[in-house]
Length: 165
Image 1 (cartoon, rainbow, N blue to C red):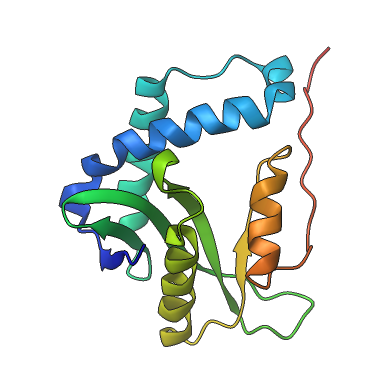
Image 2 (image 1 turned 90 degrees about the vertical axis):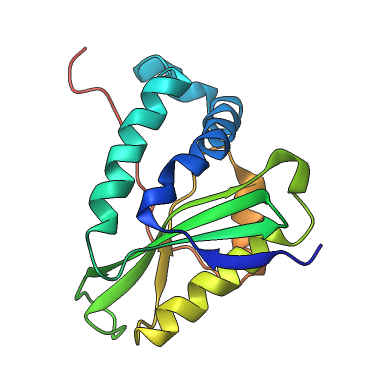
């Protein structure tokens, strides 16, 4: 498959809802252990909250939503931000963050994810960003292997735990 990668306008954000729902379902299957901390949000509620977050992020001038298309069909999307993050390593004072990467269930394994990650890397390189941070939900080892094939290495492990109880 040879998807066309475009930048999605903020006014078209609602086109992403179906793919976000697929990602939510995928995460619920890959990370059932997280249900111990609280029930999964409904797809509608989850999308409402993520949509608000996307709109807020798109107010930042260096946030981009990249979409992969095959004609009129939306195959996937990636949300990429740039954050100030001076740290212990000489990576510059800003890092890219791949906030979301979703590939339509029927398009997985066809190169769509690679195309979106490649476009995200190109976008960040244009902005003189040297490093992109990627978070993967625990249990999604397929995603870890995908990012490692793309050149990602382990950096930080994030844990969650209940505050009371």
